[in-house]
Length: 542
Image 1 (cartoon, rainbow, N blue to C red):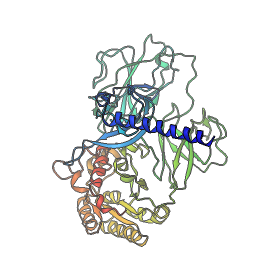
Image 2: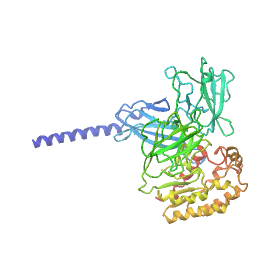
Image 3: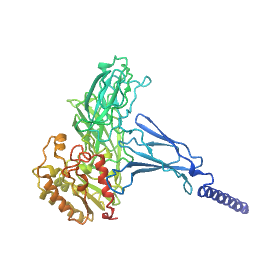
Image 4: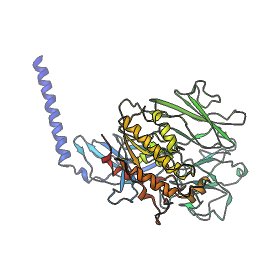
């Protein structure tokens, strides 16, 4: 019996070895000309969920899907693309993130012994054309009609500060224009500050035909791209009107993670003047109910907004749950609570290699209307290495120093990228010496706690755009203050100089192309920050 078992084992080893040899020869010598095979892909989307499907390889294999964004092209010698995310699958379909920036995908086939395909084809996210135009997420057809007050939602346009929505009684005179239609125009509004709105169509519900389209505008209400292709709306007047805020998680970058100071984001609800966000350590007892959770960890009321900034750092590991309700002046829920969303906070038992610390430029957000939860506006998104975002919007250099022990020490990174003082720079009652003293305090705290402080120089600002966006004046001496602060920063052993890259053509103010509001770099500006930091990896300790 023993001889039979040994013979059987030997036979299996022989078969396995022969099979492995055949696979090895097939892959390494490309016997079946696998490298000549071209992977072709297509995209489909339903209610904001996009799927990429490609031709299955004629050989047993798995696939690597790489997601890229384009670099700014402003630094000589830079690669054209920046790798954002990589994942593996055995399937020939993959759910891609409907990101809020143009993204590109590369699908590579792998066998047991390595790469099979030779193609390096970049597949572009189809939501971003040239000229750019919003792409509707919800379609209201005969099979899926709208209520009389439906949510109209579209994919966000990079750097779109606000949107102009047009309602028509038929197709426009011309598609994809930069102006309102001269025919079939019913109404329009520019009071839309995020990529969706619950719109009252009751005055037009008896129209034989109804269409809508939307375009993005910058801070000066100049068009970014063109109007979306007009989308028909079929209305069912008996259909229930949506009675809850709609969470705005449609366009998220791969690997989405809230900053340490989270921000919660939704599509505004028709008729609501206030919203209350609640945060929980567990799911609510009932979805879409009307009563607050009895043991919620935190709640905050905001007036007429579509985002809510958490004033507390969330660095304790675990899963967090949040939802939002519209409320009236009596504190009563209008309709019901939104669906519940979650985010994960990892454990920091091992010292993270890099964290970022500072004000709203670090926290994220941009183009006036985009919150730090839109991580395409965070420079950490474009770094070549992971980094924990400990930024907090509204910080001065003084408040950054004051919260250092509470916010940085529990995470205890080996390297801390520090950028704070821009809000102090524009304030007339804060001197350069105050900012320098605060930065020195942060620097000394880092040294005391074995954290390498890596200071970023402050970029210039644009006072006229700051006035346009925030209606606040800027200290006339901001430039002299910036020069003095940056001279101090460049006296330190570890710093990265951002300032020279952010000037306009006259080398006098922040380039308006990089920051709509004159203060917070937008997507290109955040990419540029990361690209500069990526070139100075030698300043980081391992």
